[in-house]
Length: 326
Image 1: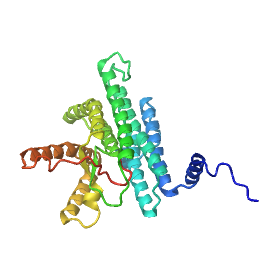
Image 2: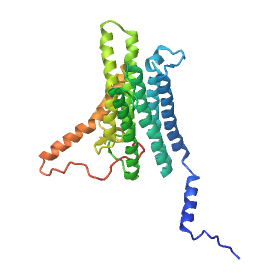
Image 3: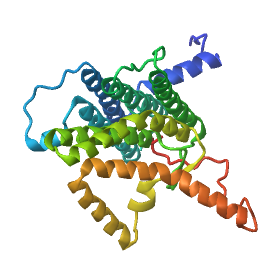
Image 4: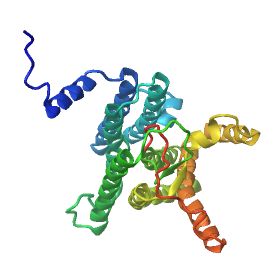
C-alpha cells in the first residue's frame, strides 16, 4: 500500500521545497563575474585603508606603472573601474547563456552596494582625512566641515542602496533594448567619484615631478578637487534616487548599426585618453552626470512651450535596461 507523505498537500511546505530546489542550481559564469565585482570593491576598501594609514606599496614600479598607480588610493580607484567591467560582464554572460535569475539579480545588487556605494564614499573620507589640516572627518568631529563631509558621504551610501532597491522592485526583465535609465546608474556615480580621485592623485604625481609656476596652479587644482568631493558625492546620491532620465550609452551608440560620426567620436576619445587618461575619464564622467539634468531641463522647457505641455515628459513606467547596471 502506498503511503502518502503528510506534507504533500501542504502548500507552504511544497513552496519551501520548490524554493530550495531553485537555489541548488545557480548560473556559474554570471555569478562568478558578480563575485569579481564584489571582490574588487572589497580590495578597493582595503587599499583605501592602507592609504589612510600611510602605508604605500613598496613594490618597485616602472615609469608607466607609476603614472597610473601613484598611490594606494589610485589603485583603489582603478579597482572600482575593474568592478564596473565585471558588473557589465555578468549581464552579458547571463544573456548569452540564458541563465538570468532572481538569485543573480539580488547578488548583483549586493555587490553594487559595496563596490559603487560603500567603497567610493570610504575613499572620499580617506582622502579628506589625509588632506585636510586640523579637521577630522567623522560624525562627531569638532569642525563643521568634518561633520558635514561625513554626512554627505553617508547620504551617498544611503542613496546608492535606495537606488538599487528601487531598481529591483520596479524593473521587469524585458528582451527589448532599452535606451535610458531612470536616475543616475549606481556604477556611473561610483565611476565619477573614483575618476575625480584618480585625477587628484595624478595631479599630486605631477606636483612631485614639476616645479616653478606650474606648481602653484597644480596645488590649487588639487585643493579644489578635494574640497569639491563631498558635495559631489551628495549631488550624485540625489541624482541616483531622482527620476531624471539618463541615456544608456551602449544601447544608444554602440549596438547595431550606427552613424559614421559615432566611430569618429570614439576614435577621438580614445586618442585623447592616450594623452591624458585621468583627465579624460574625469571629463567623461562629469559630462555624463551633467547630461541627465541638462536634457531634463531641455525637455521641460520644450514641454511648457509646446501645444501639449506634457507630451515630452517621461511616463511613470520604468524604462531601465534589462541588464544589471543599476
